[in-house]
Length: 233
Image 1: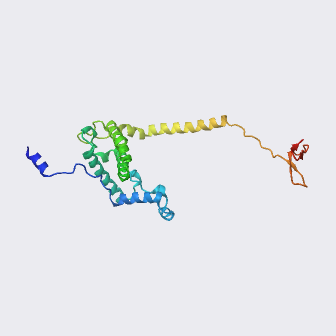
Image 2: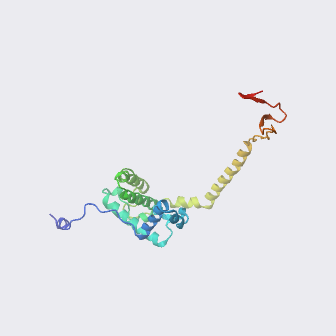
Image 3: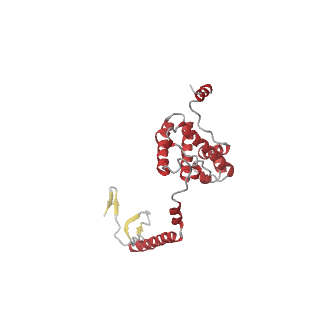
């Protein structure tokens, strides 16, 4: 037995580690979202516009510096946890440069949120769904997008020249011309297919001054008389 193996046996470690707990600011954000859904009417009103509440699974909505910092620290802990608990082969490892990949930032935030929710459930159903679908599909998408670009170290964005070309003056003008052409064609299309609407004329009828009964027929038509069995012409 090597010295390393002896040291490892002398210092037992947990078989599995618990899912990382987010910091105070992230927990507060989750608490406000929960109360926006389940809280009292007074509390819901006090939260203001619910559409503006920060959502940790959508990092771009977290605009307070303290919250943003807590979120990044939590997501980094989640990545370390995922790499230890769920990754055996190098191909499934989330690279250490994940903050430099916006697509990974977006996906890791959602993955962490769904794992947090699954862990809070009273049954294992949600966690089974996370194991079966969320995590493997995330790993597959990460492999397809990163390929081997960052296996050893972070590589510059291969798509940057094409992206810059997209923002260039010529490409921008080409798109704006296409948009304007479509709007112009839409006006022509709507005008050519314009259908005249139905003409509604007031329906006049006579009223029996003695009984108040509306005589069923246009003004000037022969009034109908009624019997006990119903109308009769």
